[in-house]
Length: 407
Image (cartoon, rainbow, N blue to C red; front, side, top):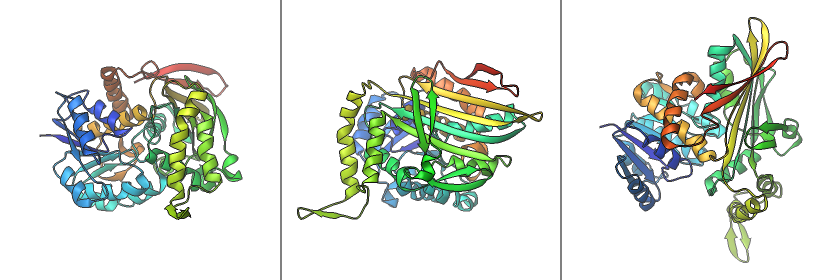
């Protein structure tokens, strides 16, 4: 019997991955594993007839994880924050000799997991890291250009926005804070540099972007791993940036302000005799303020857009391709969970043929992923910008042509 285990299957991303996996006969059984065991069982009950079961798992306890994944065909890891749980859960999958996929978009754990490549190869385990939206779909669009549209890829600028989701959990907000506190790598003029999002070095790379179906917003340097993985697999690349934002801006700026005033540290403070961890207060405050900020900005539902600009040459002439995949009704959960589910199915089918630890651009076939994503989207009835990726091509003479890439 084929079995996929979705770690964190009740979370904001895991739920969408589970629903995508349940949309077709991809596995005999879907195991929804979550620290909230009763919620996992209730979610499985919602999917009656879809071969789902719910179980409890404690990601901080290796024995608990091993008991859940030991008989799996594939493990899909959606438990964050990945800077805490990514490497140990990958290690558990390697030790259990189980195929692995995750949606890690944190830089530092990605580096640590890529360093586990040798161990995964020795175990014969394929481990695909960062297969969501950005990273994930973004990497595949750059790879598609390299394989199909251009002779050489010289620049890749990845820009993303989302917002309006019904809720955001503490792990998501801590991930965002982590991005604001730490170095952001950018690949500029053929070399890796680091900037800080809230400092002048990072502000120099902020740019305004028109996102279809969402609007015009500033985007800020983000420490997503594409800037370090794409240059490894595209030797002609000279520039790779990752820039993002969350709307409404008042909500995003609140998080930035909490970081600026120093309330996102982990050393406890005594407040009226009680120890308080500043970042826990900051996260609780951000969560408490979110409904008001969404209401004041008149945000009534989720939306999002991934935009990828790829520059390069074909027959010696310069070309630019701009891909935009947007939705007025789907947010980060769908945009991340569905690509992860696609990759898990492709990995199970053997259409991703590689051992070791690797990012999407190293082994995921872009057209196969797009075809399966289209199949899942149709079954789920999820809006996806007209079931296509908007594509703008700017030729050597500056001529601009708009088309669509089917998904």
